[in-house]
Amino acid sequence: MMQSKTSDGKAVRAITSYLNWRQILRVMTATLGVALVTLLLSTAHVNETAAGLVFLTMVVWFATRAGIQRSLYVALLCAVSFDYFFLLPLHTLRLAGPQEWVEMLSFAVSCVIVGRLAERARSQRRTAEQRREDVERLYTLSQEMMLHEDAARLIRDLPRLVERSFALHAVILYVRDEDQFYASIPEVPADVQGGLRAVTEGHGNPAAGPEQYSSLALMLGLKPIGALAWQPDKLSREVATAVTAQVAIALTRSQAIETYTRMVAVREGERLRTALIDSLTHELRTPLTSIRAAATTLVQGEGLDEAGRLDLAALVDEESARLDKLIGEAVEMAEIDANVVQVHATPQHTRTLMDHVVEESHAILAKHRVVVTIDPPDTPAWFDPHLLGRVFRHLVENAARYTPAGGRISLTSRRRDGRLEFTVEDNGPGIDSADLPLIFEKFYRGKKSSARGKGTGMGLPIARAILAAHGGEIDVISQAGQGAMFRFWVPLVEKEPGSEEKLAKKPDPSAQIT
Image (cartoon, rainbow, N blue to C red):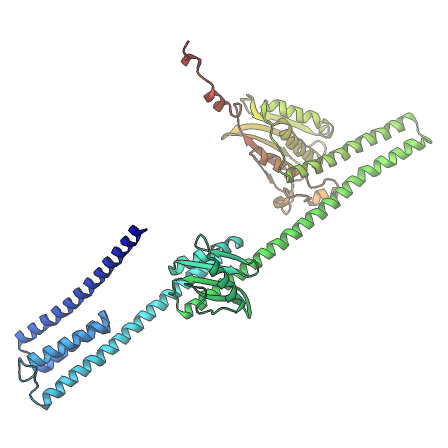
């Protein structure tokens, strides 16, 4: 503790000594300058008028460059030199007569007036430069506020933006609605917090603010929305008012954006929930109606032969499978929303995966020409066959549903750039250009799907979410009347995930000592 105080005292004395030496050096420079000019004028034997003008010019120069104090000192030296070397009687400080007195007084008064005018001009120039600098800083601050993308983060960053723009030591922002403090310093003192609350409520003195801080209330019209405090007190009243006005506008804008974002999220959630309920209600009611009608007819049994009973039983079986599929999609979508999808990768051949998909979808593919192409080599790769099969089946069934009978559906697989890439291409009617940007959104059903009355709008979002969990992506290329091509990929993994780490940890038998 004592060493700290001693070192601080030495630093203060060193700074004081340095400043004193600078002042002494400046005085010596001014004295030497006057002496040199006096010597030159005396050597040249100029008259008193020319000497007075030269001395007056020196006073003006020092007033514009060094300030009023040094200019008055130079004026005193010039007056003494002017009297001693150029006014009669020479080499004395006495004046010979009224003319010399008039010359001396005129010179002295001119020096004072010119010095004051030069100092005023210098002060006005400094003020203009300061105002220009303040305007530039205010413009920079407003630009940073306006270009900030994240509204919530802008409120947190406002103190640092103000501190950096105006080279302050500390800036503290108080938001009244949240009763929250945001600062460019690690911790806000308790007395400063109380002071800012008082300033916001109008009980504090805005000019003084909390102790050691200057502060102003943030106003939206006549309503206080917070307060801003800064340290040190280097902002003029006009600049401080402009800064607080900008901060108030930015704070209000951020709160408005945040409120609007919450409202949009609520409306979107409500829209999705309504779409889900409408879609599921319609899609679930259709197979239930068919199942109920078939079951009622089977129970009554009047006028039914064996073939009719088999047809009704097949209808019940088909609609039950459809109902099970719809419920499975809803459950799968709920799992995806809850982020519980897990990838269980195993070594698989892509030929096996694609053949299995075609076999499971044989009923819907029976009236189409299916072409399967696999670019060599078809060595085993690690992926989850259940998840990729789910994606593949949905794309294949979509292609078969919208492609006319006899149409072609091509399935391909290839390896490129570290990816295992698959495509499902058809020559059907394609996808409407208005639907393309939206087909991967939840519960969205394109014009053709809505016209056919089938689909819940969950299949493609589920496929995209499955691929995202697998580290892959999906996209689509389509033109109306020219078919569609869905392309999806997952990372190509040809070794068991983590096998290299296991191998690195396994001890080398040759290194063991027997």
